[in-house]
Length: 160
Image (spheres, one colour):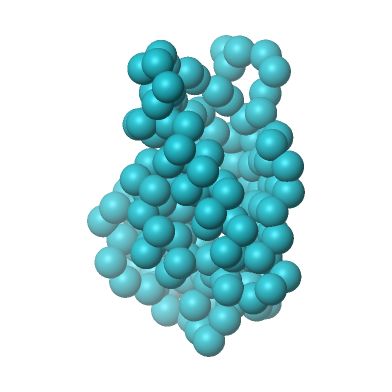
């Protein structure tokens, strides 16, 4: 039991080195979702549509709410949020998450976190930094956690 907890803590602190599940139960689920968050940040940073397709549910009820609007369905999220906004507006992106909290309830889970986003505007090469808060909702599908909803808001005040 102590080994599982240590592995889960290590995986949460160093998600790039997380290579395996720690077994059944909430610690394994939290570790898997923390890894999913790392993959999400990687998909934002690289606009990797293949990775995006692997971490999101393809159920018609998925949704993404952000300051530019609402998207429903994986195809709309992929095109409008990732291709048009992340890839179209920015030539470089760096999403950093902190204060991550993960909650698991059976085959459903959610996370809350704060983020810092550093990017370079494609149109003129200027840099932009924004800060905000995000909630993600997950569903276990065929044994794997998938994102089914994202809702984020930008902070209007600079981070301390």
